[in-house]
Image (tube, rainbow, N blue to C red; front, side):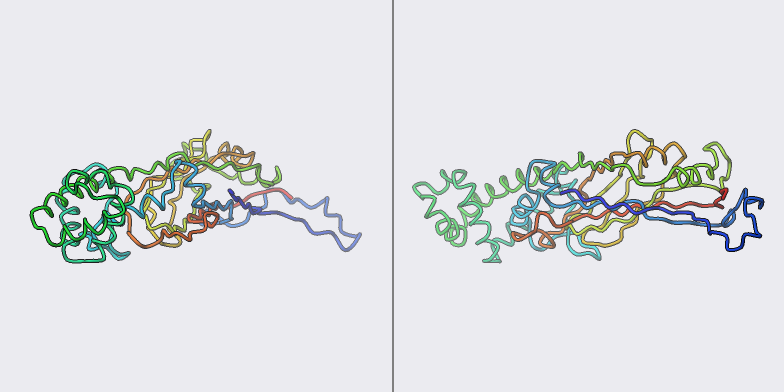
Amino acid sequence: MKKLFFVLLCGACATACVDNDYDLGKVDTGNIAIGDETSRFEAPLAKVFISMKEINSDNGTRIDEIFNEADIWLPTQLPDQDDNGKFVYVQRLLNDEAYRNDNLLPLLIDEMVTNPDKLDKVADLLQAKYYTAFSELLPGVSQQEFKTAFVETFRSNETLRELLAAEVRTLANDYLTTLDVDMSNLSYAIDRIDLSDDVINMLADNLDPAETPDPKNTLHLAGTIDNRLPVTLQISPSFPPTQIVFTPTTITANHDANELPETRLYADDLRTIVRGITINIPLILEKYYPGKGFGDSLDEEEPQVTIQLHLIKRGALKFDL
């Protein structure tokens, strides 16, 4: 389920008089200002939870199952590593044949020769899904007998090993080019935000026009993203029908509090958002870290990506009591 929680941005209140001798109606309270051109006010706007169920339903596949199989086709010792661990470049897997065939797949075959556990996992996968691809190389072997025959032949018959390895490379290469998981259509409807017209007007009336050079009174939308997925993502939320679009930003895998850059709002944008709007949240996969987050027991309802949005008002706030 999509869960959106909205927090009242700000409020203003006036006190009651305590002595009938004082008539506050005769006091000039116009043009009251809080802060100056150097002031910064921040208020929460919305929180969006993206669960695995929503990611899977958006693209019609189970992303965890897709990458669980990729773990078997990928070598354990990957050529790329950063502070977050070992990874593969997803877009290069999809589009760079040399990256697959020269960098990754030779390491897979080498590991199958030296690591019995890796050979066993590959043989299990081949028996379950790709048995028929080896019918000419292992003639007369039933699917039930396949794993044992494949492992023994791969270990002991050097000539056939080359042929088996070539077929494994072909299957692995074909599969790794299918990791183009489409997460471009994620969208979330925001209902009307319960803000009074006075508060909306106070914010809208305290903004410099778009053409103002070196503006001091501005409103910005910003946020943070907690990403529990084992994939680094590029994200660029937009808020149609406004022109608000975040600059494409990299969101690190398995990392809390990734920062969304500020994007400026104007009065019309604010009024449109408050009336209710849809957030489009296209995601592009950049890096995948095998074995760091997907699992059979994953709760599909549990948030995997959490986006917290807030408003930043710079400059003084002026209002009439």
